Length: 171
Image 1: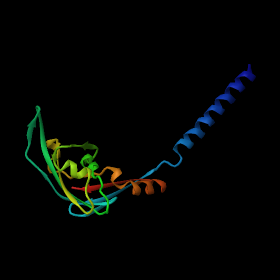
Image 2 (image 1 turned 45 degrees about the vertical axis):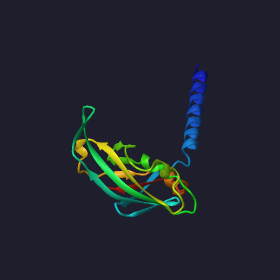
Image 3 (image 1 turned 90 degrees about the vertical axis):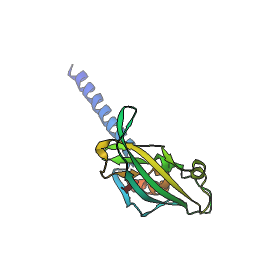
Image 4 (image 1 turned 180 degrees about the vertical axis):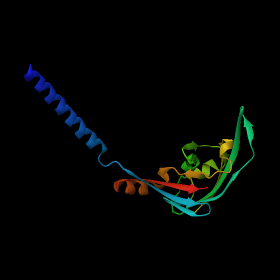
């Protein structure tokens, strides 16, 4: 009986060790720190093959939409292609507006969809996005988080240094 108990304990211990080794292998090389590069309105933000400038951020008046009260938050930005190739900056319209842990995305606004998909060499395009935010956020500080595909080489470099890299604009 004691022999069986010892074997069961030994097998359980081997399983626990194997599980621990596997967890270590899976998590080895995963970024453990965050590095968020923060910019401000009016600053030039270098992207891959492009330069972004957020030019304005304003709140409108409270509106009723589909039975809910919202405040339109309007974001204006300009993007310039800094390369000799036609590029896509369409991911900019997927940017997230953040208030602490609350994130808001939109596709509302005004922009030339064709031009943001195929921005010609050294061309520029203006993008205006309108986010519907809760009235409690009106006048509060927000941050705009940019999609990582717009600066993927920096993301990969930081990842190899054990960091998660991101870019945000303080509004």
